[in-house]
Length: 432
Image 1 (cartoon, rainbow, N blue to C red):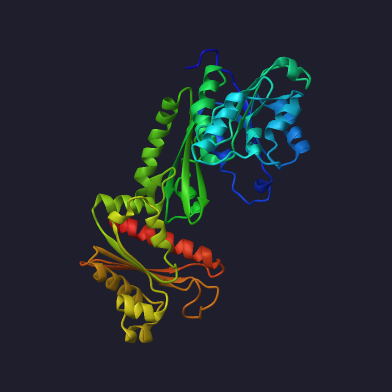
Image 2: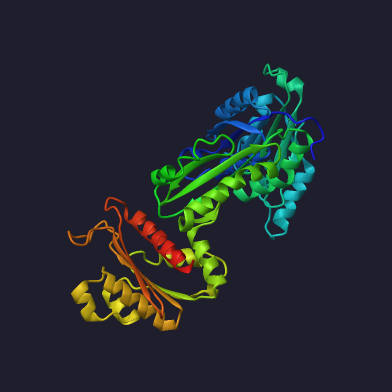
C-alpha cells in the first residue's frame, strides 16, 4: 500500500558488464526491469550499459543521479576483481564501504549448506556503502543494495532532490526474486510508485508477415489508449496492446475490448499470448486431447523433437523421436521403399508421407509426423533448391502435407529453425 503521496518518479537502469557490451550475453535484465517499472507507473527514460571499468561506471552513476530519481544497477556484485559495482557506488558519492556482518554470515551459510569452503574473496560481497541497506539474497551469494541517499551527499553533486540507488545481482533469477520480494514493496511504501500504471499484452501470430498484420489492423494502429503496435521476429509476429490507467485492473480493462476484437478477427493466425510459444501450444493441445505423436525428421536433425521435449510432461504425448537423415535410415527405420526414393528422391512429398506413415505404425501413435528437405548451404538443384522442405502429418484417417520454399539465402540454422516452427504450426492447426 502506498503510504505517501505518489510521485511521478523517473528511473534509469544501468547494466554493468563488459560481456554485455561485447554481445557475449543478452541483457534480459533491462527488459524485465523496464516492464516492472512500467507496471509500477515509474517512467524509465534511460537504459545505460557500461563495461567493467571504475572510472566509466562512476561517470555513469553520477550522470544517472542528475536525471533520474531511481537508479537501478544490474550486475557487478560478484566476488571477483572485475565486480566493481559496490565500490563504484561508494566512490560516486564519496563514502566508505562497511562490512555488513549479517550479510557475511548469510554468505557463509550459503556455502556451508553445500559443504563447500567459502573462498575468502566472497567476503567482498558483504561490503555495503555507508548509509545503504543490504537486501538479503536467498537465491545466491550476492546481497542486493537499497540506498535512500541523504541530501547531504547529493548536494556535493549539485542535486537537491531525493534519490534512491538500487543494486541487484546480474543473474536473472536472482535479480527478479529480489526485485519482486524486496524492491517493489519498498518503492511502494516510500510512495515512489507512480499515480498511473502501464499494462501490455502480446497477441502472438504465425502465418502472416508484419506488414500484412499491420495492414489488417490499420484501423487499430492509431488508437491513443490503448495503443496497438505490430512486432516481428523469428518467423512470427505479435500485436502488442498497451494501456495506461490509474490501476493495473483499469489498464487491463481498457485493453480487453481491443484484445477481444483481435482474437475474433485473427482466427487461427493467433496462437497465444505473451510468453507462450508454438511448442507449448502444441503440447497443451496434445495433452488436452490425449493424443500421441511420433516424429521422423531429416533436414531439421531432430529440432522439432527437441522443442516439444523441452516442454515438461512431454512423455505423455511423445511416443518416438527419430532422426532419419540418410536414405538408408529412411528405409530401415521407417520403411520408406527404396523404389520410392529412386523415383521421387528423399526430398519429396511422397517421401515425407511415407516417413510419417511409417513412424506412426512403429509405435501405434495417433499421429505420425515427418520432415524432409534441403537445409543447405549445399545440396540444392534447379528443381530442388536449398530451402525446399516437405512436411507430412499422418493419422489413420488422413495424411496432410505441406511444401515450404524458404529463401535460399538463409543460413542453414535459420532454415532449420523456420522449418521446425512451420511444422509446429501445421501440427497446431490440425489439432485445433
